[in-house]
Length: 239
Length: 104
Image (cartoon, rainbow over all chains, first blue to last red; front, side):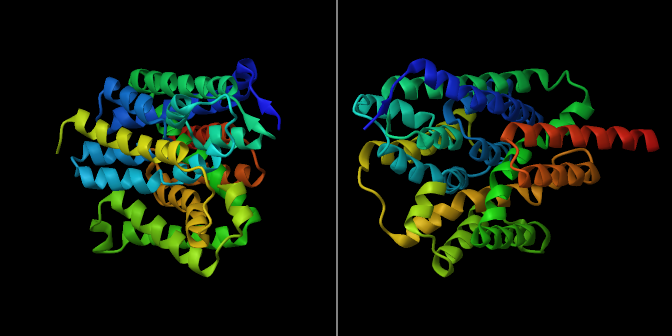
């Protein structure tokens, strides 16, 4: 079986991810500092987590002085998808990758890195994977730093406009799947209805935002896992 | 309320364990149909729940945010890249808010 193991090819494949991360991380940097965290705190979050949705959910919890349980459970549920990606990726890694390499690769196994690695035929090697994760990691870190540091000197109108960028990326991930997959469409609409209920209805709106994400996503996903289970191949391809 | 390093340790630790444990420990494929289905839906429901209705409060005005959201959905339906969708929805917000300052 073919093993992709060129460092340069990894760098090249990682460039589009890097560019995408620059802008989204930039928006996260602005959002985080705007929410009340320091520049160095914001940068450390990005450099140690490398996860857009999880970080976005964590900032209000940290700023609001939330409990560690709330933070931990929010990260667990929001980032649970990485567990399946890591399981899938472990089948994809070639013989050149040892145990230590797995510890390193796991650190930057993002949605996009996973997607690119999965698309390769055969297996992916150590050099290729290190090249692939390098640029996105740099893009995520540098973008965050620039956003956090320069967000203050940008005009308010630009900051406001960039506030939507990270959500725009989420829309770009979810909507195409809703278009082609009817079960996913209904499931996501149900989750959104729950989310709106927790935002606007009395009593429900008192639930902390970290838990709202967990409750709505788990409820909708579990319900549809029962009433509309996916084929095993489908789950692997699209996860 | 805890100190920042404690929060950082918890979130980074949990996130890393989620990614690291399966990659290091699990070699067999998951066979449980419910679990596979649940994990299949999770990324989309999580992102959707985080986006709606929060996206409408992500800019200076709900009007500009709604337009930015609409632009993002249309571009996503056309299967544009993450970068394109994120950038152009920002541009749309900027344009709408600029027009609103002219009208005011």
